[in-house]
Amino acid sequence: MTELLERAIARVRALPDAMQDDAARMLLRYAGEEEAFYRLTPEEEAEQDAADAEEARGDYATDEEVRALWAKHGL
Image (cartoon, rainbow, N blue to C red; front, side, top):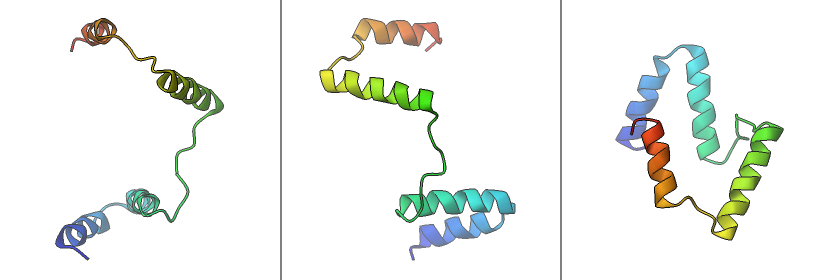
């Protein structure tokens, strides 16, 4: 185990049980040993499918559209 991972685990051990479980789920998911702990709603899945289809078509926002979005949110 690397020093960084040992340090991270030591920090996680000091967290409340629920947060330790959350961290464990994330690590297991990253290692491919557990199902995702967040499941998309049907609406979110539909939105993701639509976004994937736009990407497949090469349908991206223009620079002007991106600048307008940033301006809308004060960025």
